[in-house]
Amino acid sequence: MVWSVYLIACYMLGTVLTAEWVSRLLYDGEIRKKGSRNPGARNMGRVYGRTAFILTLLGDAIKGMIAVGVGYYLMLPLFLVIVGLACVMMGHIAPFYRNWRGGEAVATFLGGIMMLSPYYLFAFLIVAICSVLMRASITVAGWLGFIAVPLAAYIHTGDGGMAMAMTSLLLLLVWANRREK
Image (cartoon, rainbow, N blue to C red; front, side, top):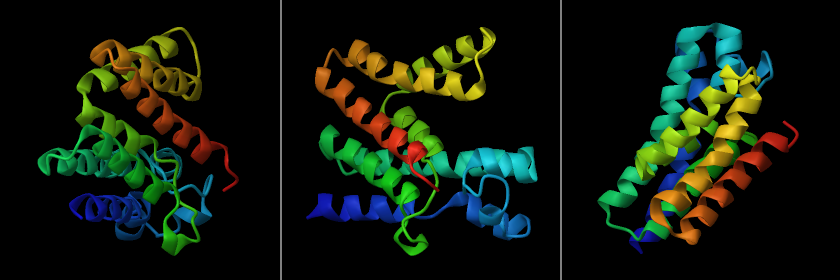
């Protein structure tokens, strides 16, 4: 019973799109009509600037951190905590009240993996930063960093299941980024 309420709550938390709230509270509230029309940190930064980017990035990352943190607090099995992260990501990607059209869940994923293990976020950052320094675009560097996460999970835990779980979350990100907006 506890786990089902946890998973539903994770999805519902994910449906709170930080970009829309920041856009409404600090700007003109029209982020879905500007730039790429994506309610995410990158579009907020392009349209409204650095402050909007940072607020949106932090808000979306905190959603992932809360989902994982609450799962740990409830002492749920790690498998369910990872499913909780997938649920909060799905809520961000496909909020029911927005005709299943949300953001890409990149920051939500990053916040969640930071709570699962800071090593995963560290691996992401090292690969992404090195890629940028080698002249890769920010987008390519980010995807290369994401690819490092399952490898870091395997190296850190020695568990192929954890690497597969991280790979599944990455496939969710790929799906969210490939679908038509």
